[in-house]
Amino acid sequence: MEGKGDKARFAKDIIGDVSKRLAAEEEVLGGVYQKLLVPSETPPRDLYKEWVDGHYRLKVTLQRLEALSGEEPSFDQEIRTLAEELRTQTNFEASEIIPHLEDLHLPVEPEDVELALRVAEESISPHPHPNAPMTPPAVAKIANRVLKFIDQGRDKVSGSLGGFIKDGGG
Image (cartoon, rainbow, N blue to C red; front, side, top):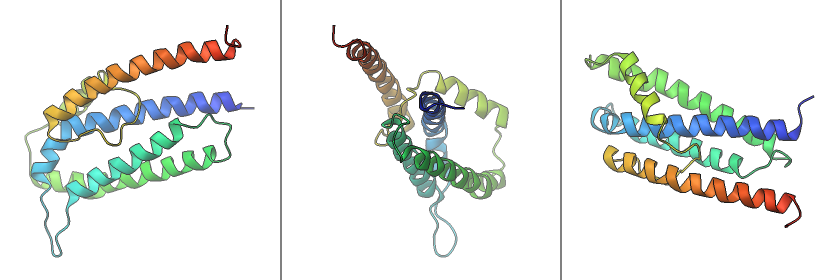
């Protein structure tokens, strides 16, 4: 049987992976999307804004989930919420953004985009930051590096204090 600690560790891995992917997408693809996903149709539909809003919702959910220990009654519901938001965002990107970009016949290979995303993920914090700047990409890149540095410090301090508190304070 899976314990609460296992659930929390599993959630931490998910939070880290999804947070890093979202920030990498914003860093690598955000500026391109902002330029290419211009409002179209009647009435106008702003695919870029919808993409940004979806990422924001995911990061807020990740942040709420990160604040839970796995013991709270709301933990399982937050996991379900995250799963549903991920499905919604993935379906939106697959059905709306990718076909739109394919229609533009850009000279970019999917493997190159994936490589750029993986490289970006290596220098991004595994913690969600819903209010971090997404554009321009240079600002997002700098913000991601600074946030990773700050988060590493916080993680070290909280890890040290966690051991201190668990050991009875001295």
